[in-house]
Image (tube, helix red, strand yellow):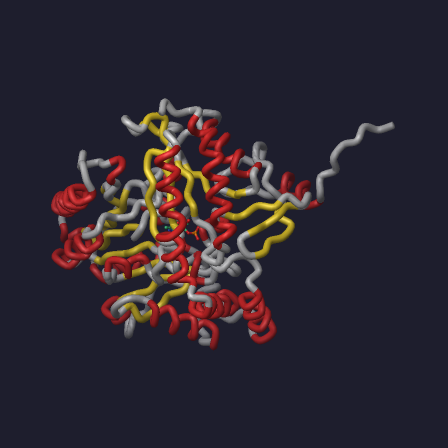
Length: 450
Ligand code: PLP
């Protein structure tokens, strides 16, 4: 008789043969075939189930299959699925109104895109048109997306394969007290020195050439780097002093992730442009955009804005945004994220840091946290080298596998675990997920000199 061989599902077979996944080689990847999902959980074809501590790519803020969000998309599909972006329609205009209402200061007009990278492209274009200047100052340790301008602005190794990119991007170091580029010994010193470095960069580049400073309000994929108090205010002041536009990339940090509608609200800073995506509608239909100040919007009152997308303001995506914003409000999810971060996640991670020698640093706010794993707490030597791959990242892979085996889906980046569950995660689930992390850290500790 024939040996029993597992029969791959059509999904697995077709995926293996025909799909190229982002940032992956198709020869090596064996993706989980997701069969279903609900709230903070998803499961595969064999019924294995995970608590999602990644919110997929930090976007499913209201969790999976939220009934109100599904109903809104269905209702919009019945009414009007798509229109050209030169028409107006109820869903798009209502989404813009709600976003403008939530945005700080005089950021009152929205240009919609399909996602984060296109939002960055358009924010850069707007800043250049508004100032008549061309240079964009962008930070190391940042991710802004994978289209030409956005990847050029990106300050992590994902940029390297796309170099040389378009000209005009100038890089600077942002604050990161745990691995200070400025040899600072505390957060206040880090803040002061990072701002002095930024001021020097502007001077050396010629302020009259600088269109924008582009930065993630709280750096996401590169480590949940929460800026020290005063940093963003200092960036705003430098922008004001030199007529530079401040672009806050809130694609990951915005829409509740940080326990605020927009992360800049935490520091009462009003940028000239905010980019958003992900949490705006929890990713149920692709959507992103740029929110612009009245001064920038005024540029395009009589002069046509030289940019567009077939699907700008897509009705299905915008109806999902209207519903998602409604859910945030009805369920009090923004405040909930802040409270869960302060009351549960922060204290739990600090306790883990006290117990586990592999935990070098713990930081975050809202439901946006990272623990940084190290071989040596004294030297801060990371558990795996910078940009490790091909086996050099084995210690982190082992740690991630330990989480997955215990039913937790982790977000692992470099030598860090990011803890970014949906904002609807149940308290019990959150505590159980943190207990799994705690257990899995025993494995990381074996690689640490402790
Ligand atoms: N900006 C930030 C801060 C992001 O985290 C991301 C994606 O993770 C992007 C931009 C790019 O967004 P998208 O993948 O939707 O193009």
